[in-house]
Length: 168
Image 1: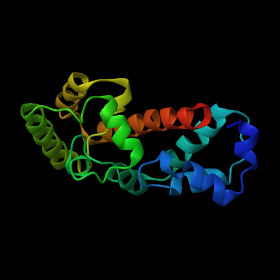
Image 2 (image 1 turned 90 degrees about the vertical axis):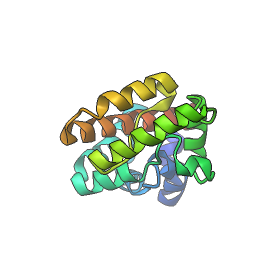
Image 3 (image 1 turned 45 degrees about the vertical axis):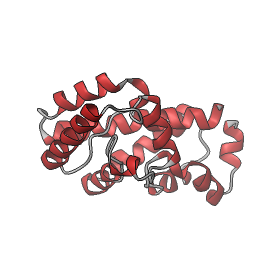
């Protein structure tokens, strides 16, 4: 899809087409829709990131909390979004040993307890071992640093989803 076609979409179609970019949070795309036309893909990405940055901590935390745990309940009962299912599978999270599953479960619980939102990482840019190492390391972060890190990971996820949507 060309950028001219993106800019020409009716507002509702733009939201329908790109609302999935942010996990269960189409409000980001809704706000960015009003900033069209975009000069290039970087401007579109910048508008999306700008909406998140300007949203304030409460909305940012809601965005983070809308993400599923990695290899968590939503993956088991198959209620992940299509994008999350494919992304988690790309990192091998759909093929965990019982020991790996137990470790993911324990780290997810510890992380959520410490920070109040699920661990978020752009799984398409790593693998199981990298994810587990990051989970262990990031448990030592302070809350402010972790919110910033998690939002940065969301931006990476959105970037890859947007590139795939535009360029197949």
